[in-house]
Length: 320
Image (tube, rainbow, N blue to C red; front, side, top):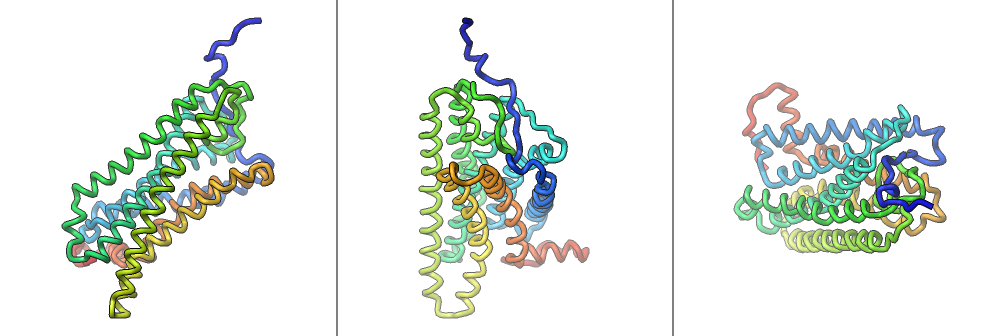
C-alpha cells in the first residue's frame, strides 16, 4: 500500500455548499444579503468620503469612525461577494490557499472591529470627562498609533490560525457546509489532531472579548458617573446624545457576535442552516447598520450631507 505524503492530504480546493438544507431558497436568501451589502458599501464609502473631504469632520471621533467604516468594508467584502456567487451562479469552488486568505481577513477584521469600538469608547470618555483637553489628548499621531496597534493586534493574533490550519491533514472530504471559509468549519474536515487549533481559537476569543468588553464597560461606567454629576438636564441630554450612536454600534456588533459564538455549544441540536445564517448576520449586520446609525444620530454628518446636496461650498461652518 503506497504511503501518503502530507501534500496528498491537502485538498487543492474546497467546495462551499452555501446554506445546507435551504438549497431551494438560496436565491431568495441572496436578495437581503445583496441589499445589505449595497447599503454597506454605499453607506461606509460615503462616510469615508465625507470624513476625507469635509473639514468639519476632521476630528478624532470621525477618524475613529473612518477606521470602523474601513473595517466594515473589508469584513463584508471578504464574505458576501463569494456568497452571492454561490447563490446566483453556483460557483462553489475555492482554492485551499484562497480559503486560508479569506479566513485570515474575516477573523482579522472582526477582531479589529471590536478593537475600534474600544477606541471609540475611549474617545467618548475623553470627550465627556475632559472636554477642554479633548483635542490635546487625542492628537492625530496618537490616533494613528492606536489605530495601527489595533490592526497589528488582529494580524498577530490571527496569523497563527493560518499556519495551524495549513499544517493539518484533510481526509474527510473537501465540502464545507458554509458560505465562507470559517476556521472551525475548515478544521472539522481534518483527520488530524485539532486540539491546538481549538485551544488557540478559544484563547483568542477570550483575549479579545476579555479585554475589549471590560474596557468598553469601564469607559461607560466613568462616562455615566460624569453625566449623572452634571447639574443641567440639557447638559446631561447632550452628553448622552454624543454617545447614543456608539452605544447602538456596540449593540449591533456584540449581540450577533454573542449568538454566533454561543451557537457552537448547541450545534448538535440546532440546524446547521441556522448556524450559517447567524454567522452571516454577524458579519453583515454591523457594517450595514453603522453608517445608518451614525448618519441618523450625528448632526455634523447630516449637515455635511445636506450641504453637499444643496450645492453649498462652505466646509468650515460646522462645529462639533
